Length: 307
Image (cartoon, rainbow, N blue to C red):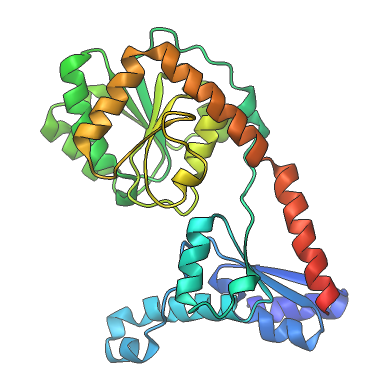
C-alpha cells in the first residue's frame, strides 16, 4: 500500500519534504510528521469538497464518492502548504476549507512543453477547427457541434477535428450524425503531444467552449503554438486569455456568440493571427517550467524554514 511504501522510504532515506498529489496522499501527513519532514499537497481538482461522510453512510451508493472526498479533504487540510494551479481554484479551495488555510493555499501554474513554442504555422487558407482534450461533457462539445452546423451554412468547407478519448465519444458521433454534420467532424482519438503539435500547425482556429476549467492546459498549449483561439469566459481562462487581445472569450453555452467568434476568426485570418501572436508571447512568459520550478523552490524553502 501507499502508506507502507512511504514508511519504508522514510526509514531508508532522510527526506526533508514529501509532496503529495490527490487523495492517495491521505496517509502522508501523519506518517511524515513522525519523521519530522515537511508535507505539501497539490490539488489538481478545482475545489476541496465537503465530505458528507455521515450522509454517505446512509446512502451506500454514494459512500465511495464521499470517501474519496474525505480523503482529498484530509490530504489538503493537514498540509503545511496547498498548491493549486490557478487563482480560480485557489478561491474555491479556500471556500471549501472555510478559509482556515488562507495563507497556505498558493498558486503555481504548470509549465507547458517547450515544443508548443516551436510549432510553425502553415494554416493559410485553412478552414479547419480543432479541439483536443478529454471527450467529456464539461468540454462543451455538444455546443460546439451545434455551432458547427451554423458555421457550415456560411462556410461550407469548414471541418472540425476532435482529438482525444473519453466515454462521450460515441454520443458525440451520434449527435453529429443527428445534426447532419458527421461528414465534417473527424474523431482522431488519442494522439501523442508531438503529433498534436504537428497537426494543429495546419488548423485555422482552436475552439474550446468549456463549461468549467480549473486551469485550461489545452488552451495554454494552443496559445503557445500561436494558434488563434476561441474559448469561454469560465474558471481560470480569463486569468491568461484577454478577450480581443490574446484570444476571444465568449459566454459559456452561448451558441450565437460562439458562432460569431469562430466566423470572425475564419473570415479575418490576419487579425486572428495577430491576437494569436500576442497570446503566444503571454504564455511564453507565464507558463515555462523554469518559472514553475522557481516558484516551487521558494515554497519548499519556506517549508524547510518552518521545520
